Length: 202
Ligand SMILES: [Zn+2]
Image (cartoon, rainbow, N blue to C red; front, side, top):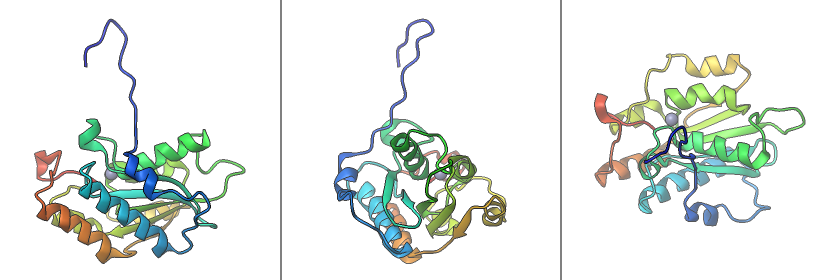
């Protein structure tokens, strides 16, 4: 992008319009982990079908009530931004909604990050800094790798490392439904971006 001296462009993050439609109903509650994962997998599926990004969805819920705080989808290709993974988008939107960088701040209820696929190295690193207290994942790391995505360099015991920081982790929730979207994307010949090492990232 063109720039004048010492003036750089603003970076903006905008969710596709269909995400708002899917998320409508302010009083809606996603009571169970499966309810929350079903919503997130639907985000990933519609992101592919609407051509707005990669096959990844995420959302942040109030742990106790199941109220949706913020949805997120992968926006890497459309926005030209490598960090706009679904989890990062959900965190950024959530923090904008609450007006704070810390979702674990004083006076706030515990928040839960639900992701259609286990986080890549970047999103894993960002999870503790976000302030969420719980992480729930659908498709497993190896499911993402199986269709060509690269999860990056993650320590083998990453879930335990999060637990050590006080963040509970639940893996494999509605795994088959989440994997089906990854496979649909691959079957459609979807772009596997950042493929210098043979795979893109969630
Ligand atoms: Zn990621």
